[in-house]
Image: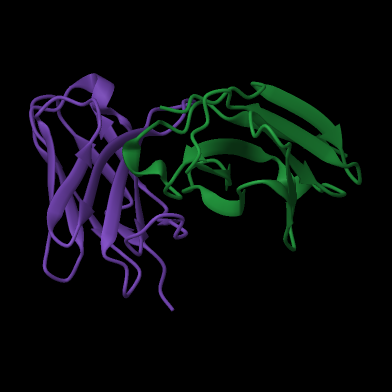
Amino acid sequence: EAGVTQSPTHLIKTRGQQATLRCSPISGHTSVYWYQQALGLGLQFLLWYDEGEERNRGNFPPRFSGRQFPNYSSELNVNALELEDSALYLCASSFLGKNTEAFFGQGTRLTVV
Amino acid sequence: LAKTTQPISMDSYEGQEVNITCSHNNIATNDYITWYQQFPSQGPRFIIQGYKTKVTNEVASLFIPADRKSSTLSLPRVSLSDTAVYYCLVGDYYTNAGKSTFGDGTTLTVKP
């Protein structure tokens, strides 16, 4: 069974541009979570989607946004890119519910130059 | 929100048992304790989860005292491949659904 897949693996953008990152959850999982991990730091929660709805949002500016599609895949959009947005962006998926195991993808390495 | 505190780093040698302790003084009644392992440039991987007492699986054990204000991840007979960052997470969802961050984790370095 395929795990959580993210694309692209690497992305290089110029400051001020927009970046779109994609995530395909494990089949049957309805919840998708997005995290930002700057180099050498822990994971910072960005967004949580379930059944197409945004369930929770981390402490990030509005230029970080996303959506979840009917097939439960998800997009993370980052507008007006800043140098500080350079990081590994991780997506995880799970069944909805407490204490259901979450599985992470390999991440998208975004570099803003 | 349950805040967790872990040592920043630990060193060990191959074949030793490693114990990593996490403090979570304000853990809530419904909160579970989950540990993840992360290798460089990869997503975290679930290791083990528990609520109280002791939990054991094929890769680790988790010890939780009665007051649940701390927990200890025990890795038996570590190898070089266990070198990674280990995160302790407290909440009522495996990912905590954003209710708290993963924190900085504990960087475990296993030496030959």
